Image (tube, rainbow, N blue to C red; front, side, top):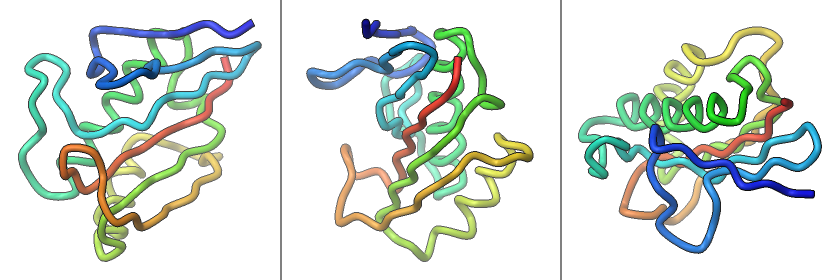
Length: 125
């Protein structure tokens, strides 16, 4: 049976979706963009600042579900410009340690609210 996970330490869903869904001992997070949960405003700054906030949002959701970044199995990173990959990767490495999760990185035409990065995860509980 699936169960919705939510926390006020990450941005509220801006549509008909959950911050995360737990099924069995797996957790699927919705894509997180660089929105500050306290203000509801986009984080100002470069791709590093945006990536850092998106990953903080992911971490808050994982914590609300009783897991952590250490239990992330797979990530998908959406970038509006693949030229930002190296800078995103530098910040990404601050949040994960070996063995690193499997990852896909995809360039997309646009993301919600005009952000440069969105990150979703699958984690073990």
